[in-house]
Image 1: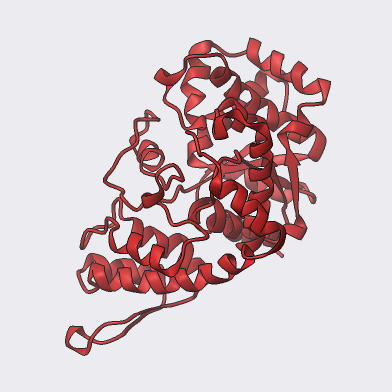
Image 2 (image 1 turned 180 degrees about the horizontal axis):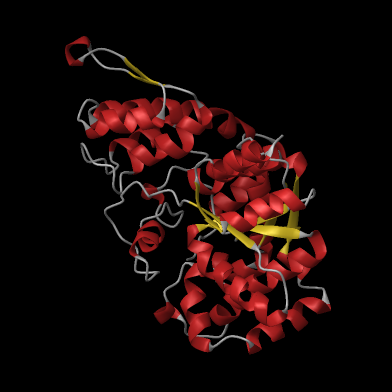
Length: 366
């Protein structure tokens, strides 16, 4: 596989930003065994973004001949008071996440799962942590607290200040132990990656390449959760993103046909509008990554069925008013149900079922 093919796979949606593309190209040209990672707090049920979209993007990297590590950030979930800080539940949620990615089609046999609770046992971890803590200001760390889904004004105890410092420590420890070259995380984690790149120079370490993916909009995109970033475009993504803590804003990987239908029909989807339109986003980042075409079913009096061969064509027709929001929603309901049916089936038996029941019945805390 040549450089252009690998780069094309890496840049497929939902990839949104590469810092820097020049460094990535140099990496692809100079190193044969490249490793990327993403990290997740095990904190509740998986939705389209954390489950399906993560599986799609991980497979892009694997197809581009890049080894992938998923970091199960159990201690981070503890610091962020997920499941009320119950570590036993957090670990069960981590196991559930792995089952979820497997069900979503991630090539898990080619993915290495690393747990924070294992990585932090290394004394070098805390030596690196202390060196990083000496090289940054409190204000700089507070600005990065948004990676935990918190606003800086929410910082009331040291745990939320420790959180970003640990995430930066992870970058260098994963480089030491697993050879990680690329931080491939969501746009909401951008501040931690930028902090790691800044700190790298102070520590005399190589800067990681940072590749950030789009955050899937919540279904009620008109409802903002807060202000998390100075950059308005990034802030929009974070504050309007699909969230497990707001169930009606999210399509979960376990949702029934009835759940999908109810949520999609109630979703924000203004006619002839692309900005903050979650239905178009689902088409772009999920449906057109799983299918090479979409059939929009319509009555003959409204023009009959319409076959669309790319997201770009769909968007153009929608913005021109040639596809009605209700027709688009009805198509999305059918495609999502087809995608989610085998995932639901995966969680109907065995270990996957047991883990799903534990997480589903646990009290989710934000």
